[in-house]
Each structure stands twice: as C-alpha cells, then as structure tokens.
Length: 403
Image 1 (spheres, rainbow, N blue to C red):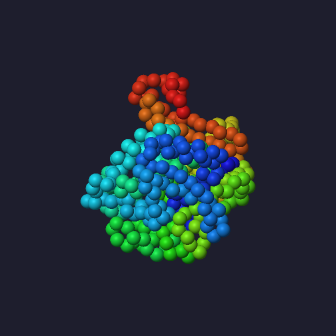
Image 2 (image 1 turned 90 degrees about the vertical axis):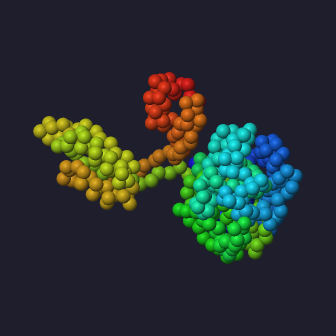
Image 3 (image 1 turned 135 degrees about the horizontal axis):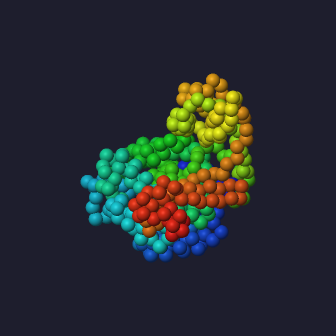
C-alpha cells in the first residue's frame, strides 16, 4: 500500500505542507505554474531551498497582488487569527465564506481539487463560527490573509490529488505553547479555532513557546489524514521537507515520508450458531443488532439439521475486542443454546468514499484499494434515490454517469 506519513513534530501549517509535498512531486515547477495560472496573478506562489538547523527544506512564499507576506505573517500563519472575523468586524477588506467558496469554485483546476479545498475552508469557517458564536455565513476573512491561506489550501489539495496516496497517516500533532496575538486580543496556544478543529486528534504541547499548528494546517490535517499515531513499519522511498520561516532551537520543518506498507491481514473471530426455531424476521432483527454491536459482517447459510429439519447457520465476524459483546448479543437476540468461535486471518482492501458530481446530483463512490487492485463503485442508495426521482432504470443510470 502506497502511503504518506506526516511527521508533525513541529506542528503543521499550509505553507510547510505545500513545501514538503512539492519535494515529493516529480514536476514541482509544473505544479507551481498550474497554481499561479489558476490564481491569475492575484496570488503568486514561489518556492526556494532554505536551511533549518542543518536540514535543507523547501520554503513556500505567497505574493498577494505583488506584495510578499512577511515572515511574521506567513510562517505558522500567526496572521490566520486575523483572517476570521464575525459579521460585526466585516468591512471592505474582508470577504465572506460565500465569496471564498465562489473564488475557489472559479479556479480552473480539477473538480476533486476544488471539492477538497471547499471542504477544508468549510472546516475553518465552522470552527470560527463556533468560537465566535456566529452563524457560519456571517464569518468573514481578511482579504489578503484569506488569499494567502487559500493558496496554501488549494496547493495542498492539488499536490495530494496528483501524488494520489492510497492512505495518509500522521504523527500526533505538536501544537506549541504560550500565547498568540490576534485581532481579538491575546489567546492561548493552541488558539480556540485550531483546538476545535483538532478535536479527536492526538495533540501535544512540546518545548517551543510559539504557535506551531495553525487553523489552516489543522483543517488540512483533519480533512486528509486517515489516522494519527506512531509511524508504522514503512519502506520509505522519498522524504519531503517543508520549512517554516521562524527559527527555533529545533529545526522548524514538517517532513512527509512517502513509502509502502506491506499488505497484511488481521486476526478476526468467527462466531457461529445453528438456528431452527426462529422466523426470518427475527433472524433479520438479530443481524441488525449484531451490526450495531460492532460486527464486521453477518451472514446466513441454509443448512439441514437433525430429523431433516431445515435450519440456518448464522455467522458473525468480529475483532477480538468485540467478542464478548457480540456473544452477549447472539444469546440475547437468537434462540441458540451455544456459539462456536473460530480464529482466522482476514485480508481486506482499504476502503474509502469520495463524492462525484453528476448531471443528476452528487453520488457517493465507494473506493477500495490494495494488493495491486483499485476499484470504484457508486453507492446503491444514491443511485436508487436518483432512479426513483427520474424514473430511469439503475443500469441506465450507471451507463450514463462517468465516475
């Protein structure tokens, strides 16, 4: 399995992620050209090599209408906290989330890149909305600052689209410490919006008294990273290093490791019981209860039992940690007097979901990959809803849609 592992020992910011991913891309100048043409001069992205505590890395700079964002603004985007304001602070130099969406949607880039960038910005706006206690549509962004962050977001979305990893993993995120000054005053680190975005993500403070993870960096991590934790066994093929502007005692870099994780199975438990005195409806109810209790899969097979009675073999697959609760569920919702348990190896493709825009509306596409195989299949419920609305047969819809 081809994966990216993000080493967030010095946090995460949009410019640092962009720099690291550019180093992994086989044609970084082409990517920069594509981005700069998309922004049509309003934002101009450049990259150069710098040294951080003896480590070489790529530092990304965004020029806004010919003016370079300064180091006190661009690195770790302390200015991002000046980006978002509630409606009471809005004025001519601020843009609403609706205008931000419209600007991103107008960029001449692949649809998947646009969709991901919009979702990242929605995450930012939702966090600011919750922090300020204002409706999301009333959240406004500083025009210059939002363009700078927008360029970072779009750049990361385009680079990940072209690098196309099967899975993205990351370390626990170092958020830094101390305080940060923003338009509303002095706030603790991590700032409220960053902390809200990083809910359910493992974070730590570290020794650096500075903001290390910005709202934009947090939103990008939350959107793209599949799981956070220690680095797995990884056969590394490339290392990209994105450098910030500030200098600390530690190298101010974000590293992205590109490599492969061997395709491997997992040990699962099969719980089986024979049933000959339950109605089909009762068995169906039991299956639903098993799924709700954490079963990986539940299925039935017709069998012949003693005295030639027809029966059903009910099988429930689960992980070891769920064995006890599923045993209890089986005894509670079936008439069985005994359950057999078997330990076996299970190999499965990695699964995900993306959304495709079609002439009939949005359709979820189920993805699976691994062992050299990649598959996609439209979600039945979405197709069925369109079929009911249009009167078209499912097979005709599948032929007409391009996924």
